[in-house]
Structure formats: C-alpha cells, structure tokens
Length: 511
Image (tube, rainbow, N blue to C red; front, side, top):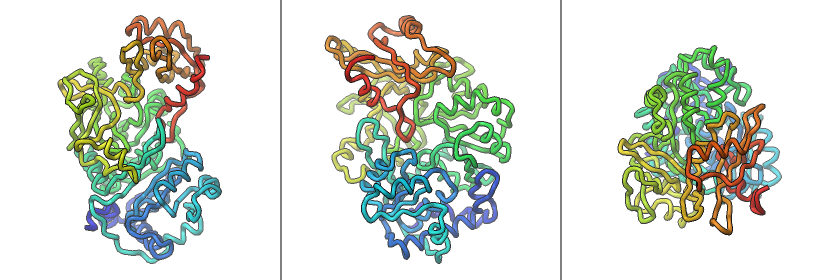
C-alpha cells in the first residue's frame, strides 16, 4: 500500500542521484536529493511524534514560494497526512476560512503570512514559520519510515477558485496525482536529471502540481532568488541549466515574448513553456512561438482534474502559427493521455461537432469529490463524468474550443453571446492589454453585453474604435453596449478574472 504514497517519488532520485541538486534558489543549491529525502523523513517524524499528526490528517501550507516548501509538502505525504496548499495571495481571513473548512490544525507559513494569520486562525491552530528555528528543529528529528497510503487516499485538497461563490475543496488522491505525472511523460515530454523546473508561478497551484513528474525523474526544482517574475532573471536561470521548463499564465507569456532578455538569451536551453490558468489569445501564441520557438504548450485543466484535460503540444502550436490556422490556435487542443472529453447538452446527450455545450471529462486524474460537500460532488460527478461548468465545442479532429463558463454566458434578446468570442475581437486592438466581457441586467433585452478593458502602457482606449472593430467582425447583438476602462481586472489567487465583481461594480447602472 505504501506504493500509493506520493512521497515514494523521492526514493529513486535519493538513491541514483544522491548528490545532485534537488532544490536550488538562485545559484545556491539548498538540498541535494539525498538531503531532501532525509529532511522529509525527519520532518515527517516530527509531524507524527511532536505535533500529533496522524494518517489522514490535513496539514495546510499558507506560504509564498520558498525552498522549504518542498520539504513541508513531501513531509505531509511521508507522514500519511493530506496537504492543503493555500495561495499566499489570499487575505488572512480567506486563508483562515480554508483552514477551518479543511480541518487543518497545523499550518506551515512563510513569515509575512504567518504573522497575519495568527490573529484570525481558528482556535488551536499551530502555525510553523518556514525557515524559522522551530522549523529547522523539525528537520533535525529522527526520521520515520514512509506511512502507507492507498491510491484512493486523499493527498492534496485543492480549493477551487471560487469565482462565483464559496471555494470548494477538490479531493485529489495519490492516484490522481500519479496519473497526472504519467500524463506529463506520455504527451508533453519525458524528463531526466538534466531537466529543471523553474517556479515562476505559485507552488500552491499548477507549478507545485507540475513539480511532481519532475521530482520523480530527479529534475532540479529551481526558485528565482527574487521570489517574483523577472524575464532577465528567468533567462539567467535558463542559461545556467541544460533544459529548463516553467509554467506561466498568458500575461507572463506576453512579457516573455516581448522581453529583450529573451531575444538575446539561450532559448535553445528552454524545454517547454507551459501556458495555462486562463484563455490564451492566438496572437499571444504566435508571439510566443516567434520569440521562443516551438516550445510553447497550451493546456486546459481544472482543480478537479489537475493540469490534465486537453492540450495543444508545441509542435501543433508552431505548425498552426506558421499556417495561420486560427482555429487550432484558438482551441485548447485535444484530450490528454487516458482522458475522454465530450460536449453535452443539459441531459448529458453528446452533441455533434461544432455544437456548443458543457464540457465533461472522464480520466484517472478526476477528483474523488469535494470535501464535505456531497451535494456539489453529486452535481459535478454525474453519470461517472466530471461536469466542468465550461462551455465549448469540439471539431471533427477532437480540438476543443472553450467559449465561456456556463454561468458567464450572456443571454440578450433570447440570443446566447459567449464572452470569449467578443473578447477575442477586442484584444486584437493594439491599445487593449486585457479585456473581460460580462452580461448586465437590462429591462428590455434581459441582459446586455458590457466590456471591461485594460489599456496597454502608454496607450489610450477609444470606445468608438472598439465599437467599430466589433461592428466589422461580429453580429450586432454581440457588440458591447458599454466600455469601462480599468487600471487592472480583479483576479482571484489563481489569476482568474472575477467576473462576478465586474458585474457587481455596475449593479446600479453603467458609469
């Protein structure tokens, strides 16, 4: 049964690659593989013997990216516990709510987050500051043997984004995450000890999940010393390695593509640029291929099926960019390894190619259910399929194109308007950096389309120009009735746009 425990992924690298770097911060090796495995086993012993953690207990991580994060995460699994990573971007009150929802009585946190959390955490919560003397003492404990876990046991509680309401905790098992790792090897890239994963995105989300297949193959985990995203720093780290991969949202892909540091850097040492977490415009993919070569991968997943639903591999994106294939570039690719994807109507009847319906998924990566929420679990996992809440269409070649979240569709005068098709038109204007389209209540039409726009630095957004652009490209009923220029779009901790907040901001009428 211990073979189901994710912590076993450390065993191979610790034996075969004992003195090779496992965790690097900047240009400093923090742990080699033998040292990481030893520290994890020792921390696990302290969790059990000193902090009373038993198999199946939840342990939270409310921490920014840092070297001890890996030790804390794997020590949870080694001790048989369930990890509950929480974005460090959340407000302490939000983090405290997730602690209570998960039942975690212990929380690893980085210094700023720990100080703010202490005042609002549920009573009795033990907070250990990563990198502190107390934390170091855990790694000095006597090591313990790996605690057996089964494939179906919970490993990671992934709290969903909560863009429309209370966040739900997706229960990801050891088996789910091992399947996710296998999918990486099957249809992205096989990995080895000369590979590195540079963590420019949060370890509490996709970058941490993506770390697992890299750990299993002994690939180095690299943390930028700045703790942030700087293209010159990233390219310096790339130059120091043999083949480096990193996960970025579309906004950071744009920054990479436009960076002089990338243009002058050793792009041939980049393995894969993994792009996800938000829709990617075809123009951004084209620019990415032009700057980075055939290394840009675009994937679609959810917390409920982590990092693994569909994807466009680098070769397909590069070929589509060269051929001007807008359809493929605008899609999120085809079903991943061992994954089945369908588009269905509200009775779960599979729709024909090109018809818009809800995307449903069956795969070994699909969660066991939501934590302590039987009703939401039954709704999401109907008839053996994960119902994603996303609307899309599939073509004859299996390419999935997403058009909206089901709750974000605008119904105006009886016609459905999918925000993505309007957003794709508006983002093509040179003055527009980001855009989000929502529906607003209207007495005559039911809803009308509204657009929220962020301007490119130094540019001025002109509503008349945008309106003419829409008039030239889409049906009249799809054109926004109003344009609202913002300094930035509201986002949650995972970087997803909070359209509910945008709608609420105009609840009393357009400004």
